[in-house]
Amino acid sequence: MLLAFLALLLLPGCQSGPVEIPEDLSQMEMFQRAQEAVDQERWEVGLQYYEEFIRRFPDDRGAIMEAEYEIAFIAYKQKDYDLSRRRFEAILATYEADQAGALPEWPRVLSERLIQVIDERTAPAES
Image (cartoon, rainbow, N blue to C red; front, side, top):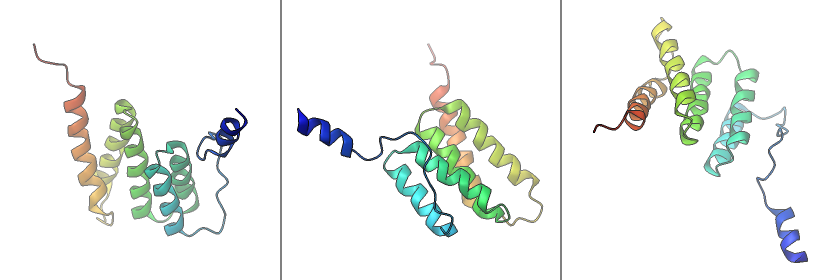
């Protein structure tokens, strides 16, 4: 019984509170930590890193678009199709308004594709 209790105490990723994100992390390190959390299905931790990334690096429009895509993709992975669709649509709206063409293409392409997948998954079944 004691061993089971100790094992529970040592389980990683069980916390749902805010993560302390070091101030000295580079953009690459923040993205890497966010991705590692998402790969382990620690969705809230990944979201915290991506949201903090957007807050810390507001001038890097391309990287912010990538972070916005990752946030939308987390909602998609959690099967929150309404939220993920809204976020993907917001990404596409940003591309429509982008006059400089300075944003990376892959978030736009994948957002369009995932909206199609969401539509297929949420369409009423034909009888």
